[in-house]
Image (cartoon, rainbow over all chains, first blue to last red; front, side, top):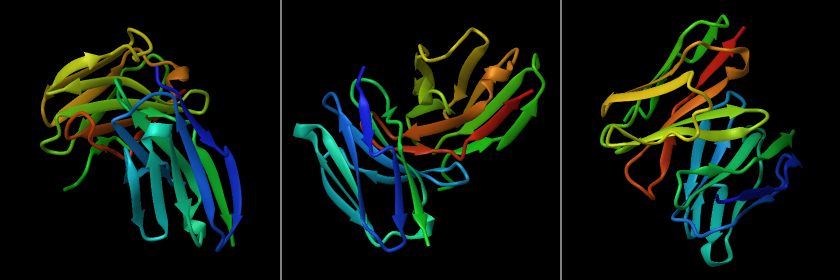
Length: 107
Length: 113
């Protein structure tokens, strides 16, 4: 089945810093989503982005489907950005999740 | 829209008891998915339905697990009998159609003691 690799696995940032999270996938996809799992365990959908670039406030994402990767940019990080960020892709099977990037933003 | 609604939010039960988790998908969504999240295995798909029909249950770990979708607005995931290794967070998600974004419920945290 399709493989999803996320990097880095862990990231510690000072409040106000910027960061880039990466997601590599092993096959063509028709759906790619980025989720934020907050400290309460909720999975919040950030972006539906099978290709192209989208922005939502301090967050933006880019997917280059032909090269099988996606990037999530977080600018001016805040403590509320802490949590785990998951990339998930759907090809011939329902969404397959990566192992996530655990982000800690320190004040 | 209220989103995907799961109940209960937390469930603590004794080993051997039957557990039923419930999910109400977003109205009009044709697909419903059940995922399980554990530290060891991450988020993994258990089963999914299309128009109330189970499509793939290959992720269901054992015969102790069963899922139903009697109508478009309700699904259950049942574990009978429950075991401590079933302790996990169980998520339900729905999607409008294939290739569309998934919306996840808040999850049910199950603890089997």
